[in-house]
Image (cartoon, rainbow, N blue to C red; front, side, top):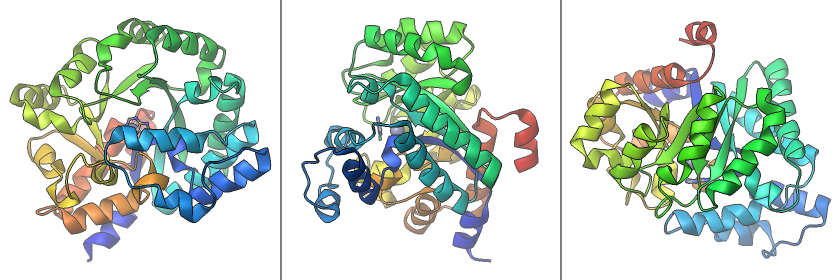
Length: 327
Ligand code: ES4
Ligand code: ZN
């Protein structure tokens, strides 16, 4: 049987996607019009032409501009329902979606608007389409730890509507230890902990995500191959890496998809997974990440495909009974 058909049909979990990164240019323009928000791009085509990134920061500038059209609870609901529809089509049975409250609260949108819209989309998609969906609140690492602590306080009335916290945005110069206190507080609260580390940043940032923040998974983590002792640690503790192939290509973390190191990670016994990161910006959703990776990166086999899907379910924060049902 054909490998692409297997990749598409496998039940899988998505563990690393930013819901604001699922806003397609068409929806950005539709919401801008609905809300009377002025965009600095004249058309969908002009906006899409700006999606030529050289590094993480060049992407983030455009990503935050796109998110500025989100104002009402219905906007957040519509965005998340559109993504979850798309995930179901790719046989995603579980999705853990990142959201960036500070991107919205800094513009005057209430925390409750953000969380209620996203949560209602998760509940409705679960009921109508059977996908299991959960939310992970991310702190923006280019902002201060005090801002992160205030964000956590503002989100605590909705503690039952997110399962964990993460750390995203500009990595280099903003190491995990900058957020030691807020992560310690989240740990006391029993929240799951993840952080972006080793996307553009050095292996030292992966070490401090593990040893200072006590994260359960590392988002990206692909720079870990530069440190053999770190590779051993990740393998020994079965810390999952949520790898995003098309993202890494678009942000020039690897020159070409063919140069991606995910096979090296898998063959070293690490719990690597495949994810879409910001699918509207990076050229595709889950199945496109799988099919392009397997078409272009050398040496990936059906065994690797099975391992990646298995890893994604294993590394998810879903209930054990759900995991056993999916595997
Ligand atoms: C992100 Cl690819 C990536 N890296 C760090 N932060 C992000 N936020 C949205 N996408
Ligand atoms: Zn990410």
